Image 1 (tube, protein in one colour):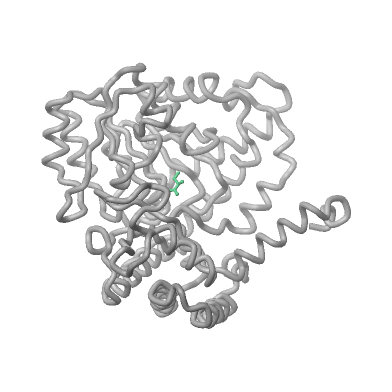
Image 2 (cartoon, rainbow, N blue to C red; image 1 turned 180 degrees about the horizontal axis):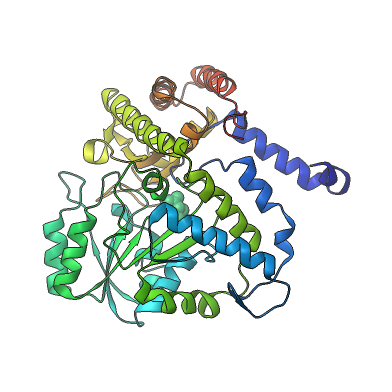
Amino acid sequence: MKTLSQTDLAVLELINKEAKRQEDGIELIASENYASKAVMEALGSPLTNKYSEGYVGKRYYGGNEVIDEVEALAIERCKKIFGCEHVNVQPLSGSPANAAVYFATIKPGDKVLGLQLDHGGHLSHGHPVNFSGMLYNFTQYQVEKETGRIDMEKVREVALSEKPKMILAGFSAYSRNLDWKKFKEIADEVGAITFADIAHIAGLIAGKAIESPVPYFDIVSTTTHKTLRGPRGAIIMCKENFAKAIDKAVFPGMQGGPHDHATAAKAVAFGEALQPEFQTYAKHVIENAQAMAAHLMKAGFKIISDGTDNHLMVVDVTSKGISGKEAERVLDLVGISTSRSTIPFDPRKPMDPSGIRLGTPAITTRGFDVEDTCKVADAITQAIENHSDETKLKSIREGILELCRKRPLYDAKTA
Ligand code: DSN
């Protein structure tokens, strides 16, 4: 960052501070990842200077001949990864993408089924404080108390009684595979549109480690910066018969000019996801998550649904005499980033819930294997069990630094 070092030391210093925090810490926030240097270079390119409202070949500004090629390349690569009939690569992030999906397909007041937020859903899946819950008439399905899993028979019962216009499948804190086919069958039974939000698992689907909803669902949205390991942003895939409505909802419905630098970075990330190494990555993300879950359960933690099929898990930490908020704070002290999380049927409040959510996409990018991951799980256990012992916490921090030095963030492999 040669120029920034000459023009704005205040910002440079903050960027360097954050880079050091990332280098010296272990990232277990399930929605985070490390984009490659190539993705970051595309993000920092002159494409940030351009306005290009409209779509390939149909822009409202001149000078878009190169941007057209960039967007067409992102579309082509995305179609190759997911096998979708149509994709819009312009959404700025996950919630705006989901807003565009609703805007394109249903009317305010229409009924939608979605997974409840504290059972693993997302704010934009109908929570009352979010635009989705304010504008649309959501009925929320839940996971079962005993198993922590979604019971598809219950989803069917709710669908039959509510007759929604849309059925939404997707999550930000659910560690089991979704039965896409069953969702589609239920939707067909009640004549509902099927919408999958695969923000958390898009990279695992791209890496062919878990099943894709694309063949079954009408519409599939995803962010591009989680397991997919691209820039912050989103895409909406759909069947051809929804293409016009989706495009119109994104622009001019919801957004103005797309972020062309981000579109280029999406194309770079899609190119990376098409490499055979990405399939190995996706497989390792799940192996690491399963090893972490098993290790934590052996140490006496309750994992919701007793394990994981994907990259994440929700851990009830209250049996160790600590809340989710306090666990997040203590783990921050030893250099492990996590996010507090409600657990299904949580007796505690969302700001200080019973759980933490852990995920392995970022550490796997960094090159952590199962052995490293088990060391991280040990450190979590030790830190939580000794949360008031400063000396012990300091020595755990040292161990974490050692692990980080063994697996530098942007070495030749990840760069
Ligand atoms: N905030 C993201 C997450 O952490 O899962 C979802 O948008």
